[in-house]
Length: 249
Image 1: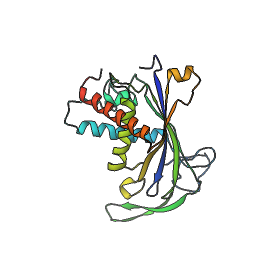
Image 2: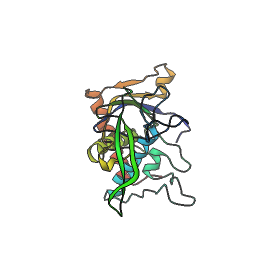
Image 3: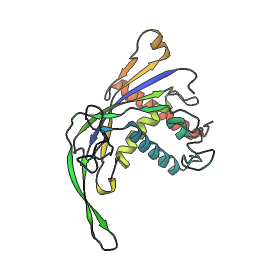
Image 4: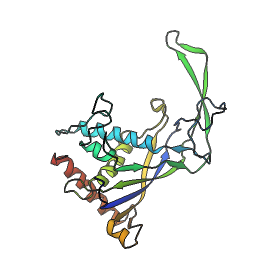
């Protein structure tokens, strides 16, 4: 799959928090001022790790494909034994990687446009006594509602089978599905944390010929333009055709 470079797609995206967001991490080995801090980069800006976004999107893709009335075998990456980590041949592995297959979709960390965070109080509950545990109060650092994160995703070799831009179509349709049906990441989503919306800000499609000719940004597609709409429609149709074909090897 990666022995040659046919094309590369750079997708720039934004994540807007619709509720307070907590993705935890420790940025120092010293005692923390906050019980549960958010993860930040070296410049103290909160980030959404690319691995967190990729994990959520992979899970949503698995749920979606298993729910279709089609004979699609989606592997379980957590199964024990030789197949642990992915089967390498199912549609999800073709996108997000398998046990011996690198991921075609590479998502970089999304960085907040502000260092602003807030503290939210929490209390651990003793379920038997149905009251707060002694010493059970803690605080959680959150990124507030309305914060904007920006990031980049790279998709290598968008063709699957005979379908030229199937991987791009999978990614774009998956973002629409995520926004409409799940839309949550991070800690305590069942308590209302982590509701987000992911939006594509622009796409650059770069072919091998573009690199040879020194056009390292390729062709740009801006959302709302006729060219973008045509590319998205064609790509989603390619992904749909690939899935319906049943030929995934």
